[in-house]
Amino acid sequence: MLEWGDDPAGRQGRLDAIAAEVRDCTRCALHRTRTHGVPGTGPATARLMAVGEAPGENEDRQGRPFVGAAGSLLTELLEGIGLSRDDLFITNVLKSRPPQNRDPLPEEVLACAPYLDRQIALIRPLVILLLGRHALARLVPGAPTISRCHGQPIRADDRVYLPVYHPAAALYNGGLLGALREDFGRLRGLLSELEADRAAASPPVGTPHGTADDRADAQQLALF
Ligand code: URA
Image (tube, rainbow, N blue to C red; front, side, top):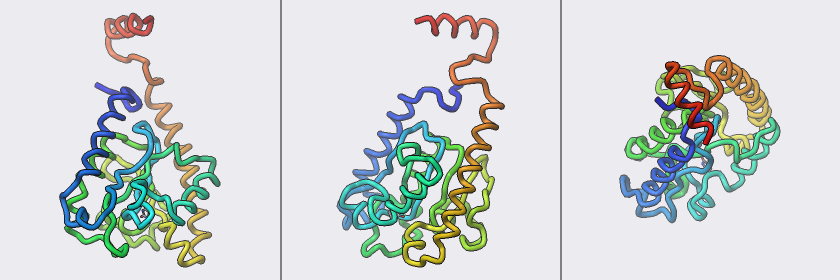
């Protein structure tokens, strides 16, 4: 059985295959008005995944998530806790831009759901950062509103989610910026805690833990 962190090349290949499907996707009407499908960016081995709402105008033009003003704030918040964008996989609930950036429609969220589900299943991040209410509603149905649960980790379906205000909401309403910064501080602590738990629970990547024969085989392989 593959352990977390194993076979990064195979996982990256499968993630790239999902990206190719997204770029050609016609599962909902948004494909008629978008310029580019925006699958997401980042490594298949990311310990942190961030999920936003949907591509905006800049993202639609470039085919990459969070490249506009909200993206600059996201980068700043990440750097403020010692992370770079290259450390995480960033994506959205919707992979195609809704016209005039209107809210996603339920049928669009449903049509796009398999892409996000497959990305999460492949990456198996330690933490899924939920950027705003649409990501929260999509991945934790029945959760309280974002204003009530931001900054509080939610453990569900064997996953750990951290809901935070959407950076675009904080750009629009500067009063949310303090809470957003505080929640990113919590994210740093949560990641450290979960990384320590995982290191304690599993042997280092590449360490065999099967039968004596398995270990001997693995030692042989390690020699080459
Ligand atoms: N807002 C989002 O939710 N996603 C993006 O990619 C950009 C802005």
